[in-house]
Length: 111
Image: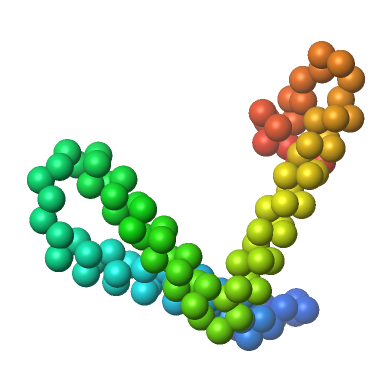
């Protein structure tokens, strides 16, 4: 990794600082899901079990992420970013003339 960041303004420590919280949350949420799977013995259809596992994992991930040092600020920052993206999408759709369709979204082109 040090080689990949050589000559850029980004340091390896910057990368580690940005990914440690999601990585730790993911690993611990996986451990919670594994423990939950071993402790529960439901006889439901596989799709239902998958949905339950998704809910358990998502809940554990968010709870762990918030519980880590600086977690509330991290979640608030993510919420702010998503809000800004939503506002940009609304502004872009408002700038189109009546009846026009924005084809750049369908083609994956970003402005």
